[in-house]
Image (tube, rainbow, N blue to C red; front, side, top):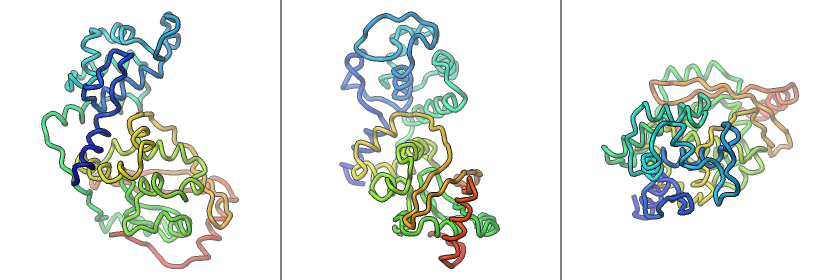
Length: 306
């Protein structure tokens, strides 16, 4: 991997530099865990936790003192965690921070996951390794049973590994499947056509960036991010480091044929392979008719992308 790509990846994994106005250090090396805690602290208003308003401040959200007091830890220790100088807080401290920030179940799980990978970064050298693109024959047979439904098998890096013919019909003309190895992140962040195809492009971009933290492995995450960061730019990096747990709603698509599609998404984990089977179900009769029309316009069968 090129040095520039390595530097870009390290910047992404480290998160944005600390804000000097918050007592941080621009020279400090951050962590995904510290980045998430800072982001939640900045976005939490004192009155939401029953705390007094201390008047106008340079930065929004909770003071470190407020959060440290609620979590039962020192301000100095919280500062070390946020700045990445302490990368191994105990499970008790992680849970205390989750309680202090009033995290919901999804945010709490994300915090615990970031604590784990932040600790792992200290003990192993992360090397870029591409994920497997192999899909088990039994998984492909399962996908085949869903024809003529819209479905795909992918992973949390955004790789589209196999799909039904109906999925290809919906994607035709959008550019999504143009690449030899289609990837939703590359498509969303580098192909201008994605911004018209995805009606709620900002929400989809947030979802894709967030799911990268659940990549099959840190080595796989480094492999994708090192190549994507230089071409996707600051918008991708910013979304990745926001750590905002997405609220996944109906997927709305503007098909180039003029059809407007609304699809529910059901995701089934293929845990053995760190892959997911995603089924897209029409959310209304109009969408069902449009999908059927698009499917009848095309022909073919189940496709696996190797």
